[in-house]
Length: 493
Ligand SMILES: [Zn+2]
Image (cartoon, rainbow, N blue to C red; front, side):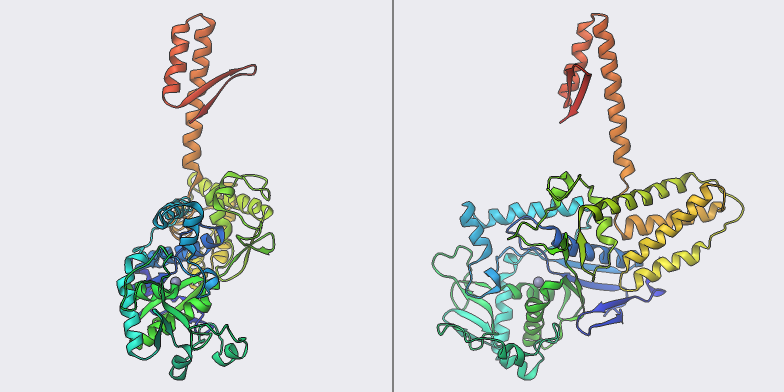
């Protein structure tokens, strides 16, 4: 199915500030790079929203028939505190606090990141490279930038010369800033600053004696600046010019601006055709922050273990909640919003279940092809998932009318509708059907109740050999029976 030939897709390009028709460099193929997590703490929900937006985009491109190489990195080299060049390495700092090796911290939080994303049903990226695995490539880029005259060395560190670069290029074009304004708004920094201009950023930092994460380089032992790894890994796996670069809105400046500068300085190419930025997630109307209490972790939502929540929510419900907003809009999370999404999610799933059972007729009262194109139109308009979801509910309304005998559907159209639903709900939106696991646990519970009843009968007949056997063998399988005043209950380990 080569659908992409018939669908014109528009995306919001941060570089031009416009919604543009998407045209890949090579027809049928897409290269997409998304800035991944810094693995020095548990992934927070705001980051999950960003990665979910790009998971949905990845899924939609694949659904359209594109071959997508999706690269999402792991920042494990640590970057500098508050993005200030004289700060302490974040990963090394955490390691000292917890008395762990830096790579132990990296391993722990990489595992947490993958586990969380799996619960949300994310597709794994095509390549997930690490910064520490690409130190050589980063050093090579620094050499090229030095050779082209856009960087300088000071005491074992190398800095990108933003002022020099801006003479022939446009530093600030992505974030809509002007270097002159940035300079005008900067107060004089301390005299010991090694940089020529306060706007210059580190490509390589000399490692002081106590610094744990360090690598040899032509400029002495040190570590790369944070912006560099994404330039190195995107160039290596997607080429000097690729289709899409994504990330959170907060990365537009300085991170992505610096990526553009590094690429243009080293190879003369504008690296990316379409810059896509996902907006942030707020909590009860306020910005989420690790340093204040206004913060929530994915596992707290799945367990309900947070004061702002009245209950636990399934990962699919949270996924549905996030996709009900457009990825470029700010989304506010609250208990009420999650409750409403939970209702909507189950209404959608129930409708889907009803569809399987509705009777068919010789004719159909509902133009399914036109409805399908409206679903595509929504996604083709900069991945408008809230509009797509509203179209899905429109179809649910028809399903309920058919179920109530007020409308009809033919057998072929019913099969078509089921397939389209499957495409959009499970493949594109990546939602999961709760029915399967509910059914399994319901069945298991029924079986255990039956065994409890048989054990009670055995005990009433003083057949203790049988009653003990039932209890012990269930225990061996991890099912604990507990006898209380109200009868026997069970728990599963
Ligand atoms: Zn990045």
